[in-house]
Image (cartoon, rainbow, N blue to C red; front, side):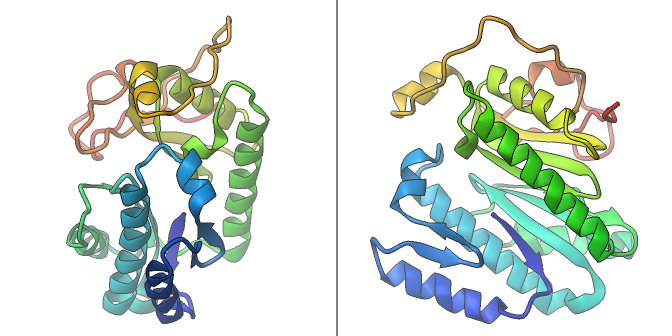
Length: 249
């Protein structure tokens, strides 16, 4: 789930989070999504990590809204306590301030700051991003060799960010799918790469590997705080948070 701000019901969301935590087995409702028993069963994160991610997103969005108000447009997405910041800020100083605020939230283990220094995007641009995200998610559902619930997809200005705890094959396959969707300008991978054996050891059924693999062109890759970059990414450059960038053609 991605947290966006500013938005009207921020404090209402905080109340919902608190009330949901008291309810125990009841689904935890935050915004338009629910985190309940079904999601926790199919999600590759532990239940504790899922709850932490919800809390991180909410707390970071609240603190950013309080500190910056309407001066910026920033989305907060957390997966396994790794935080992705996307959106726009008018100055480099505000971009860095947003990262510092998010980094101080409890349980955050790393930040990937993809905020662009520019004016906020327009409503039509954001609507186009929502459409791209929807198409990618639908394609993941249709892919019989992938578990769609293993991935988070975020789109900002045509840049697609993929998050998840996945095998190398799943990372490459998902990247290939995302690159084929119209309007995608760049694919940024923020994956935790694990082996099929590691997933099975934690009780996760891994889809069978197809006999043929798609060839995947280079993409932007971010390594989570405690994981090395994917092998095909090559050595990270000296700028940009350890990313290797290639536009989608």
